[in-house]
Length: 138
Image (cartoon, rainbow, N blue to C red; front, side, top):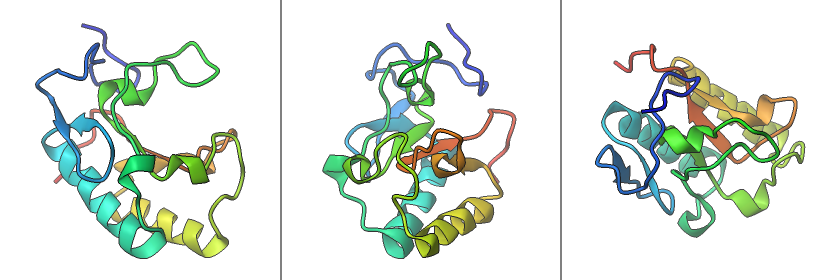
C-alpha cells in the first residue's frame, strides 16, 4: 500500500470499500469523517459561494497532479473539485473577492482541516482537499 504525503493511503481503484459516493460530485470521496467534512464544506459552498453542479464536479481519481510527477490528493479520496469548467487550473481570481472571502471563512470554520487551492502559487480555484491524516475531525 502506498502512503501519500498527506498521510493517507492511495487507492488504485475507485471500487475500494473506503471510497463512497458523494452527492455533490460525480464520483467518490473517502468515507467516514472525511465525507462529513466534505459534506459540510459542500453545503456551505453551495449556499454561500456558488451553486455546485454535480456534473462539473468530481472527487476520486487515481492520477498525478496535472503537470507534475507526484500523485494527486484525488487518488487518496481526500480532494474534490467544484464546478471545474468555470475555474480552470492555473487561472487566477475565477471567484469574486467576496466569494474568495466566503471560501476562506469556510476553511477557517472547519478549523483548517481542509485547504482551498485558490491560494496557491499555481491557482486551483476549483480544488478543496483535506489536510494531513494526523488532524482529527471532531
